[in-house]
Amino acid sequence: MEQWDAIVVGAGPAGCACAYDLAAQGRSVLLLDKAAFPRKKACGGGLTAKTLRALRYSVAPVVHKTVQRIVIETRSEPHILVRSGKTICAMTVREELDAYCLNKTIEAGARFQKIGRIERIGQDADGVSLFSVEGQWRSRFLIGADGVNSQVRRLTQKAAWFHRGFAIEANLSRNAIRDDLVFDFAPVPRGYGWVFPRRDHVNIGLYSAEHTCSFDKGRLAGYIAARYGRDAAAENFIGQYLGFGAGEHVPLPGRILLVGDAGGFADPLTGEGIYGAITSGQAAASAISAALDHGADAGLTFAGLTAGLRGNLRITERVATSFYARPESGFRAMRMPFVRNAVLKSYAEGFNLFRLSGIVRRFLPAAASERAL
Image 1: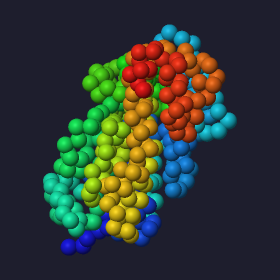
Image 2 (image 1 turned 120 degrees about the vertical axis):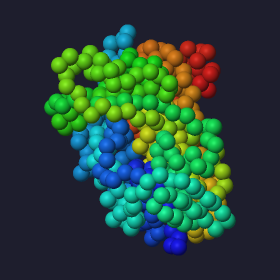
Image 3 (image 1 turned 90 degrees about the horizontal axis):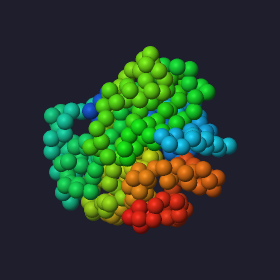
Image 4 (image 1 turned 45 degrees about the vertical axis):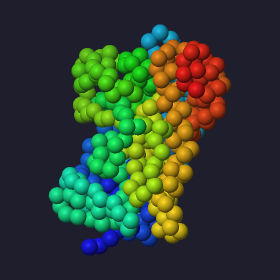
């Protein structure tokens, strides 16, 4: 049986980030996914500036629009306009982005194969065996990049640390070139509504960091009607869970690594998942390279390489709890220029833990701040 250096299950941003780096180094990589690409994927498709920097290649061919300003809304306060002289976010469509990244990864040397359900995974001192209805594969390392409902995670870990959020979205046809990116903290608890403009439509949706929050197509349709009128003809309604918990998880030694939503790397404060997917995938590739070249334990190396990212997510998890309990307090703080600039820089460029912690202590209610920090 052929033995691969690595098998990556899941060909989304996390899996492709990992497989691309390994293949570019000359490693033998098998990339597996249950879907044929391009495929529909629920996601706003916003790539923050830090995400664009993390990517190994330009994604300009699939960028619909770049955003330099954001409108923040809530129920009881006037809107806030946040501006930047630089790109805050690049708007893409996940169906196009994922297919583009997969093609780049195949060009780098990874082999792609569509498979069905994974039935069993075995790990021993020399490698990992993966069994599906199509057959058996063998590799030195296995990366679970198969999303929030990860079969790799389910078959290899109890994962009490893992929890989920939920989002539902739709597309509304319109000339959106002049539309702003909007975060609206009024319509759902522990979350927000969003409007992400693209060339010829807007992507509009609802997000909650609490997966038990009850909203569905009807709730989103009502939100769209409230914003754009009852005649607004939205289409392509689709829901998606998000994977949280990486901040509370320390990977174990071994040959099986979890990245992206499968490893809980989505941000519960903003719902952003692509940045955590790409950086955790790249960290997994580095950990595997260290194991292949120097005999280091991949699981322990991966834990070290993702410690900073996990620390950020641990902080944002706690900040999210405080912020969504009293969003009006944080919203009022956003009217102060230095707070607004810090939040914008955090979202676009990456969270500064000390700055963000200081903002929470100063402007959120004292009890909530103590719980958050």
